[in-house]
Image (cartoon, rainbow, N blue to C red; front, side):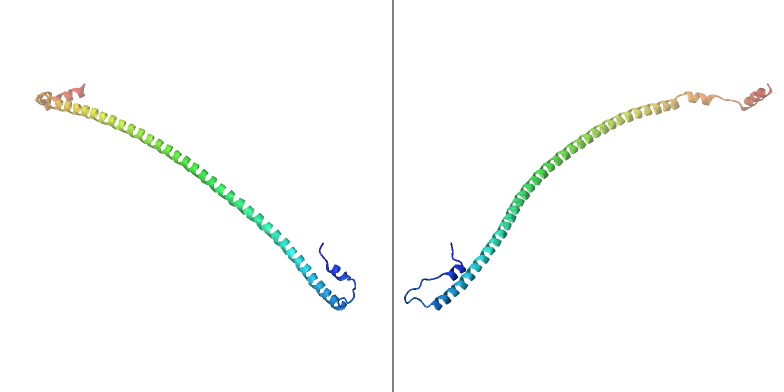
Amino acid sequence: MPLTPLDIHNKEFSRGFRGYDEDEVNEFLDQIIKDYEILIREKKELEERINSMNERLGHFTNIEETLNKSIVIAQETGEEIKRNATKESKLIIKEAEKNADRIVNESLAKARKIAMEIDDLKKQSKVFRNRFKMLIEAQLDLLDNDDWEHLMEYAVDSTELNSLKDDDSQS
């Protein structure tokens, strides 16, 4: 066990013949006691500082561990977000491709339907044109017919018409 200042102070030396000067020894011991007390105080202060520093070091070590864990979690979260974003982008692309295919197919179906309607309208217009042409030709044939000439040959006397008219009004 280390010496305390009190141990040094209470130390008694045995007296010998022609021993050391008692006052010098006591003065020296007093100086040793003072220096020893200072050293013990400094040692205690240093131990307290070491304990405080150890506490702070522990605190900073905890912070470091927490930060390291946070960084790992942030990296994992970032990777997960990246994976999810990649999956979502692939789903969006697939959906867009499906919609594009559907739109293209619908457009092709509409284009086919319109083409068929155009063909129908062309056929109908040919039929109408042929019928109209036949009708006009028939009308022209009627005009070219000799029956018109016969109508012109009929002569009606206006006096005869008047007499017929008078006869009808009397009856």
